[in-house]
Image (cartoon, rainbow, N blue to C red; front, top):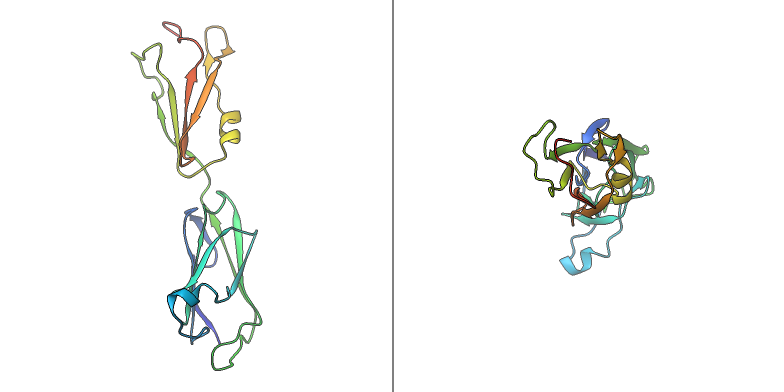
Length: 179
């Protein structure tokens, strides 16, 4: 029994946080069963650090794992194939098989209003969008809107996007003219 291909590839970087892990074996590992019975088939992999998700055998030799809601951004993961795994014909792995990949770092991809924008309404909010879902508390703690005239933080409230890929900051009071 051999692993003939994996996705993401070993050593890959900047992998999307919603990417699937795919393992392809050189021979059938699980029996051909109905889709109802396929859910009971065992997972051939472990992921470190642990990730919540759903795995399924696409056929008797291809396994796919989908993280839910996704991998953590800016993290390295190691996937290990169960060393006790056996193919349908009894063949076993000759050597342990593991590989690693890293996910893309979280980053801001859009801010509205944009830097140096003029003509902003005094009641406008600030919107920030990220390249992936982020932790609300962490994003809020890292954000500040400062009145450069007085060098004081503007107080306000946050509204987070349903998919956790951004937020809107609404100031508690109208913004000041020419600030």
